[in-house]
Image 1 (cartoon, rainbow, N blue to C red):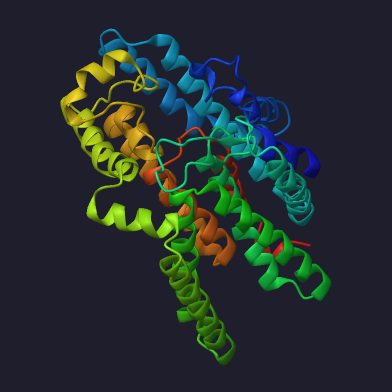
Image 2: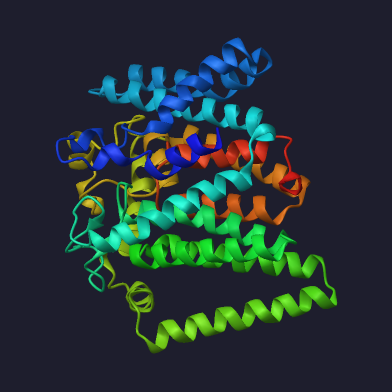
Length: 391
């Protein structure tokens, strides 16, 4: 099971970058959806007590989609059906994760994932001109025209996936008592950081840094002792050295931060300014109904809301979902966040807090709502499993 999940984690988007695959299918050719289909079968035949949870989480989406189909004119029903199906699959994946996480060996999973990344790192350097592994002549990030994406859809997705692994590795390094294992995790961490740097995933890197800093600060405040004070000083020194290094070397991260602050970074300006304007307009202009689940990325919608500055797909998960689902999507997202937050607060664990905070913050400015990886994280959080049980 662990090696299968590791392979899926590293390669579940690999078919989307094939030259003969239509761009319209990019978000649908995710191998995790196949596992999610197994999850539905598992719930129906093996975990009948979870059928009610699947119904409670998915049925409101289905009913609201049907209502939108009846209310909104010229709605693309095929896109509506595909979107509802993908959300249902993600929910089933969350339930499957929640049920099976007790039998899942996370250390083994991390081992397999990091070994795959260690193998892919030299391959990426050898095939540095491959359009399949790299984004060449990037038009978005003007400070780094060459960005690594490996077998993911784009460099930002590589950064997104690496961030979760880095968070887990950080937890294992802190908790591991055997020096040999700790050294192994540090090597894994260094390789992941190299890959993250090669991806130049600005959003993932900033949110990852902010998440770790915020959660660490809260943990240190709640448990004030001599050891934690030393750890706090150590983290402060590391963050300070990192920031100084980025400033002195005038790295793309630093330069993009400057451009973001003065409003000249086109990518972040679009992700934040245009996305917020479009989302609020989409909700108000449709009287809170939304433009229709799965119907945001259509010529009809782009023409209607062209005045907001929307020229391409809204590259942000929660705003995308809210623009399509209106007030219903806002309420659905809030309920989901509340349930997840309650579970994290109840378990009082640094790893789960980091995973949830990163996932939620990232979805405000990037990602997509039907990304299976987020729902797997939700399943970990909603289960009765605790990270202290990692062996």
